[in-house]
Image 1 (tube, rainbow over the protein chains, first blue to last red):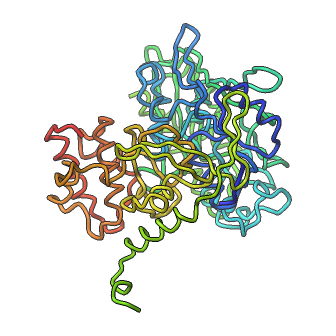
Image 2: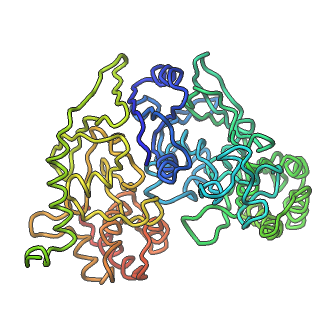
Image 3: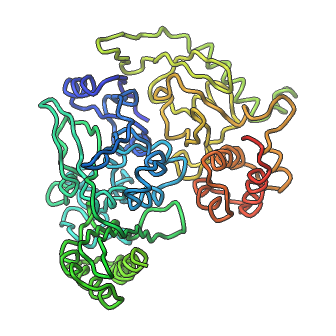
Length: 324
Length: 201
């Protein structure tokens, strides 16, 4: 690993001011992704700002919803009673991610900031517009089995790897951010970006901004399920995943929120499907129609056409599991 | 080549080279205390680091880029913790930090300042092995043994976290530890037995 300067800070204010002073610096918390990227030479920050001592480790609940501090480990959030009782979709998604060891290390903020696991991004001998802008995309004509079917561009077909983020997108979460200009809130669905012409930008955070918390608004969803399909039963990234949150009354869907993972550069909300489901009575036929609608506009590549059929089956299965 | 050298195992070599490294590492610590309780280290500067490892306080000095795994193995000679993939995919390097299992290969040593670390060397009480170590021996929970320290540290975490009630749960919550020999059924048996035995882990 290339050497770097190191700063340990104890407040969000100090973190933000240190970042402002050192342009080529990055925050580090759990480090599960960043340390790996540094070992591989994918990224080489001049300075790491250690934010582990910041007081961002609380989970709190009020009438408006649940707030999870940016430094709450994924395992703590997954086991927290407020999360498992009020937002079981999030707990399911968290437990579907990584391994027990990694969930103990990985933080809420870090999970949001993790980078794609596209093998061409990780292999520094390969072209990758995300790692090195204008160098080309190795995946486009390469082995693109894991890659996007929605929202990709000529520059990048990578997918966002998180499970947690798929649930947060479905739950209409908000990311709380602290920066030199003060505090701000970013809607979760607007946080991550599609690749477009600038695939090097994963999200809409501005330079120097720090995630301090995630807020999930209270909701009326009474049925939810997170389904993850992967190459092995546990401890693998999603081929596709589906987060379903429904408000169901007397067998009729009153409101729906559905997001998919493994299909796009960001958690992919199925807004057209959500509208279609409202007012429908639960049935396999409705779910099958929903899955057909969900795949409209999908674009596949040499090795990932299977994701269409897999996604449809996963959507039907997730809706069925959520409502049974 | 003399006989001593010829018979020297890799483990002894590592420990001796560690001693040499300690002697040569007597470079001055250049550390600046800045505003906001910041700790700052420039390139190649070492950072003072306090860790309690297996019950013993260590006052160390490390470069920021050193992982907890490399610190344990190369600076402290605690070679029980293994380096497998070095990328958080195999679980060989599992240790406990403040009682929780983590992958030490993906954790920078400096980010663990003030924490309590337990490695496989810290489990036994004198000659008495930890119940999980005994169960792994009884159930033959290994073949080559390379993944075993990580498996045992992870298994203890699995029970502590309350995820060892069923074999299915054990398999799910032990999925971060890969065994290329395929001793999984015996590993699950060992963990289930310790859980049912009810001894504190």
